Image (cartoon, rainbow, N blue to C red; front, side, top):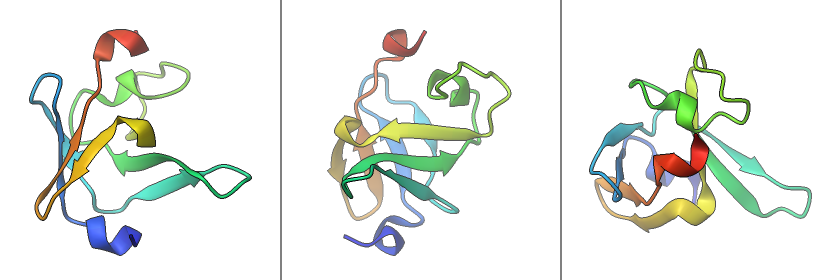
Length: 87
C-alpha cells in the first residue's frame, strides 16, 4: 500500500468513536529494519497530546502506532486506541 492511497481518509477511533483527523500531509515512521511503526498525521483536535512520546500537550501531530490500525477502508481508517494507556 502506498501512502498516497490513504491520503484524504478520515481516522476514527474504534475505542470511543472519536474522529482523530484526516490523513493529509502525513508521514510514516519506519524502523531501521524497514518495518512501519506508526502513521503520523497533523492534529486538528485536542487529542494530539495522547500520542506524543513526551506528553507535550502543544504537539501538532498525532502518532498512531501501526499495530493500532484495525482496518483501512475506502473512506476511513479505523484505529483502536485506548487513551488511558497514553496518560
